[in-house]
Length: 215
Length: 215
Image (cartoon, rainbow over all chains, first blue to last red; front, side, top):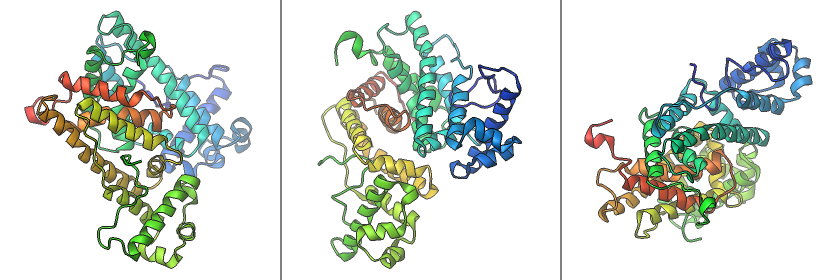
């Protein structure tokens, strides 16, 4: 699919910033692909540098030298996802933009061998992974703020709307249902959650408390 | 605290349905208290029947006979939480009721050694725990539907509002921020999330699609 889901970091992998296209980049791609595959197939408990090296077809000393341990491998998976080019789609309406965003999130959480779900699960095991996931989400929500800025420019929303609070309200039900409540995916949920958040926002919710001094 | 947080199952423990107050009930209380303490202090990996028996001061064969294994112990912790008397508070308004519910959720997720967070973490490790957590949540959301029924009776909401969808929208941001994004607790979030969900509902969101045949 051309539209990359917000928490995924799968192929086509991004070119590393330092040495695009070289052998180093190729090895990184192979190793991170192997980490993702091992993680979704066998889980965190079975993840070792040796199994990753074997699966990637890369000498284990190369993997140890560059990534040190499982924590280093996982951090780099998150970094690769963070580096990935991703922009929320412009549908012309706030509700439409939020619905597409939610659909991408739902797709990433329900696809077979979801790397997004695997990374969330790992974040409950490793503090390093939890911090990396937090950075990745921070990055994705910051990138998504353009949705709110466009809606403000179109006059759909007041200028002092709290973009982050609105984005959280729109997307949280998808994560809650699929990751925590583990209910089967509801094909209407992405649009319904987008619609109710947009409706609340257009009715005066999510006004940034910092900008008017109220609480 | 007298108001019991939705996902907690801590003391005062409920009397088991079959033999209230007897030796069996006392042993169950001791053992489940020990499971919760071990879980919040040392995590799932360190949890064994033997450490639980030792901490509870109960003979290990008693624990093995009744609960069989760690899975059995965990299931009973979830069952105890499900059995616990809990009713959402009646504040007289939809926004107020949802804000109190959200505050209880936020308290349960941010208290020191949160059993709620520990149980959610365990649900990513054990399918049995995941199913038990799903039953517990199902139970809590069902109990919370009285909030919506009261709002319908007061004329705050239309009769065909989808109670579950509204409750998920109101509560999901609390879980998303604290459990997944792991942001520091925002004291305004319980009320803000309640307010925006209530505003959306009163503006026509969350209409039950099954009742009018639309999609």
